[in-house]
Length: 432
Image 1: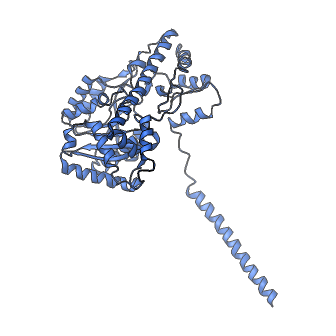
Image 2: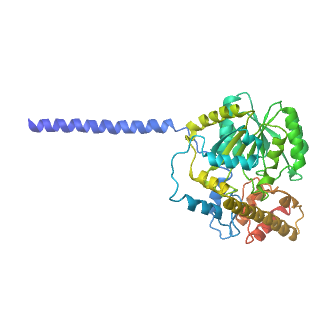
Image 3: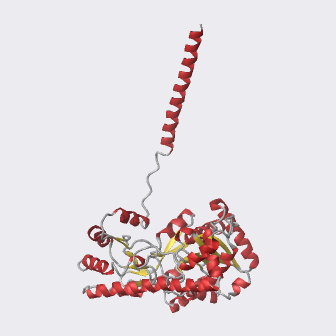
C-alpha cells in the first residue's frame, strides 16, 4: 500500500513537472511571437563609422568621422580646468539628487554665457531655464514643450543639419519642414534661398538655427547676414530656437560665437536656446547642458520653467550631478574660467591650423579642384563636397573613415596624418 502511494505521488510530481515544462515552452513561444515583428534598427550614420573603424585591423586607418575633439596625437583630451574641478569635487561634495530643474549654479552660469554677463533678461528673471542632458536633451525637452503647448506648430530645420535633429522632433511628434541653407556648388551659404524660405514660411513659424559652427557644413552666416535674418524673423514673427553646441569651440571666443543670439536679443526677439558642454569643455559623457526660453516677463518664465520640469520628470526625473558640478565650479571661479578660456581657444586654434594644413597639402598636390571652403568653414566639421562613392573609396582603399555625406571631423586630423589624408582625398577626387 505504501509503495502504491509513493508511486502515485511520484506520478503526480511528474505530471506537474511536465505541465510546468509545457507552460514554459508555451510562454517562450508567446514571448517570441510578441516581439517577433521587431526588426534590427538601422545603424546610426555617425556612430556606425566608429564601429567600422575599430573593427579595421589596418595600421594606417584614420577616423575623421567622430564628433569629439582629439589632440595632435589623435587621443581624447580632458581639460586641465576639468581635472582641477574634479579634484575639488572628490571627497568634498555629496551626490544627492538635483532638483527636477537641475543645478541652479550651473544654470546661472550658462545663462551668462549665452545671454551676456550683464544681461537685463537675467536680471529681470525673464528666462525659463533648466539643466538638460547635453544639447540633445535640451532640444528634446523643447520639442516636447512645443508639441504640448503649441500643438498646431511645426519646426523648420535647415538642409542639411545634424541628423539627430530630425529624430528628436519626429519622436516628439512635431511636424517638420526644411529650409534652404547650404549651397553645394559654392560649398557655402545659400543666403538668397534661406531668406526666401524665411519669407515664405507662415507667420509665427518655429525655426531651428545653429548659433555657430553649423553641423555638418561648418558654414555660418556673417554678422551682417545674421542681422538681415533677424530683421526678416521680426517681420514674420518667427520664433528662433538656437542650438549652440560649439560656443567657444568655433572661433576660440565664446562671446564671438554667441553673436547671432545677441543680435536676435538686441532686435527684441523671444528665443529658445539649447547649450551643450560636450565640445567646449570636453564633457562628452557627462551629458551637461541647459535649455532656456526667453519669456515676456518673470511670471511667464516661472510658468514655462514649471512645465519644462514636468516634462522632464517622467523622462529622467532629474539630471546628473557630476557634470553640473564641474561646469558650475569652472565658470564660477575666475581662475578656472580663465584657464578654460585659454584651453578652449587652444582646441579651436588647433582645428583652424589643421584646416590650413589640409588645404595646403591639397594645393601642393596640384588638385584641379578648389578647396578654399576648407579654410572658409569653421568649427569641428568640414563639409568636403565629396560624394558617397568617393567616401567609399577612401574607406575601402585608404582605410579613412567618415560619414558618407563627405563630412570630415577636423578634430581627427593631425600633423601625423594630414598628408596621408590629403593624398587620399586627391586620389579619389582628381577624376570624376
